[in-house]
Image (cartoon, rainbow, N blue to C red):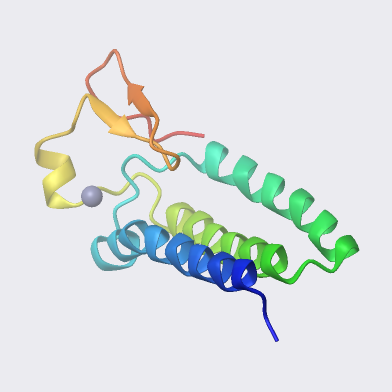
Length: 119
Ligand SMILES: [Zn+2]
């Protein structure tokens, strides 16, 4: 029987997956990798794998679920961003934003007026 905090952690894991969906849907639907930094996402993937090793060692089910969800979504985004690297949808090609938001909500500002899309 799961504890109340395990159920809350499961809800948090579901919210994490939901939070990845807009990026995944934009990549799959528009084939647009604008604003997706392969370098940053690859670093997050590496960090997620390293953190998951601790969850495996501790047999911590909520963190195993969270780590697995993060890794699955991040691998998908890295693969899709690589596949569609350099491609932009009509909206991003027409009106590039000088300010973009990163995966964790931080602001990125480019001096050229375009989001950074490189590695
Ligand atoms: Zn786009």
